[in-house]
Image (cartoon, rainbow, N blue to C red; front, side):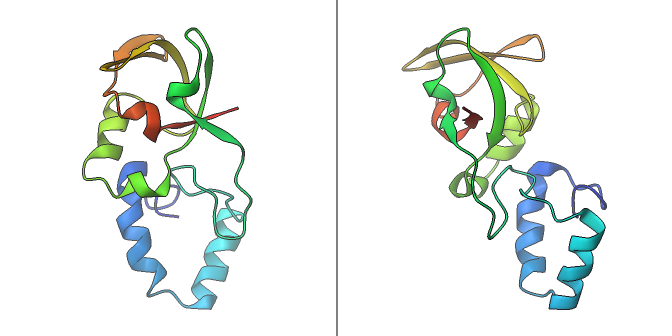
Length: 131
């Protein structure tokens, strides 16, 4: 709702959703589900309550040259100040196909939409990919 209807950036939506979650009536929730078509994930790719998670693996588990879609940013990293905005600035968000180019203890190079990017090494554990 926040992203699709109100135009919030995907990386900003978590805090607003938490505020709404505690103030929303069951009727309001039902109406939002009707409007949105019962989404299966939040904007960060995490499954909605009651929805089974799709199998994923961390970005660092990809082999060099392997490419697959970003499926989710796990809940515990949504709260890290500036992290989702950082990913967005690098073009990394759920649904985007990323190719692992090179990784090392202090290095994580990926290709996103044809552009070579050097990500913070911690992204290898915090960005989860399709299997």
